[in-house]
Image 1: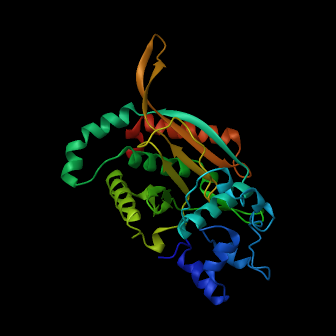
Image 2: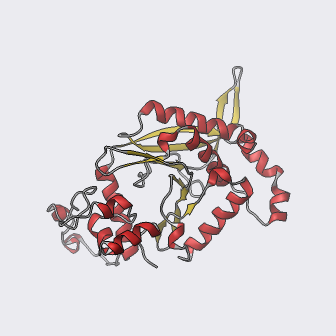
Image 3: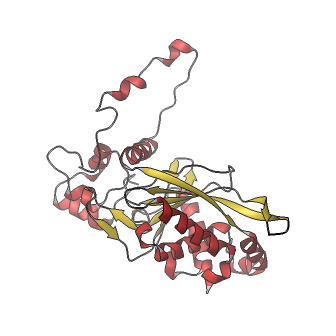
Length: 301
């Protein structure tokens, strides 16, 4: 399966223009190829949206050293999949002035609802994880805050506001990070979202995700809750303008006006492209999102 993520229409355009989309991805250092990358491909072979790689700017000297001079080493080849993913992340860091806003949300009601629905989940054969609630809440937040559901043109002059809500779900696999996409999340119920999350995650582990199930996301969720941590800074996945990181839910003391109460809280980490989104917008976005998680029945109506 190809490591390059591109919609069928973009692949068709590349064929019409005689552009090798695999080579283009390598040249610009990204796994996700958008229409503007193909349309902007010129005589240089480089998309105007991406600057030269470290190897082309002479920075390789920082890495090309003989490590064996310092002690015993072993060598392990990096897979092509991992190489392309690394190039994509490096390009994103170079090009996007990203800021991360940290907050947390109460998960008491969601955990109680999951417990209440445990029997029905078993009957349906669906594992109702907290991630399904996060996806549903994020779909509503993206409708409420359209600038987060957008992409910026390569020249920074046009903002494309999307009239759909597709969510990328980052999956940690043995062959590297994959981000399959759930389509039209805002139009789907909780059970369907939960089933699709589980299905895509399982097939991602086996590299059975189809090309049409990759790319085109409104925003990505990267969830480290099953591993640990209290906060991190996720890298925005272009051409998206924001990414939501989630870490492990923990019991924290929360003041109720009279005393501290033990409350289940989940840390949230929202990285965003500061060219499109300002800090106040990010704070309002996460506040709204946290409100949905605190009262999940509101978003399920």
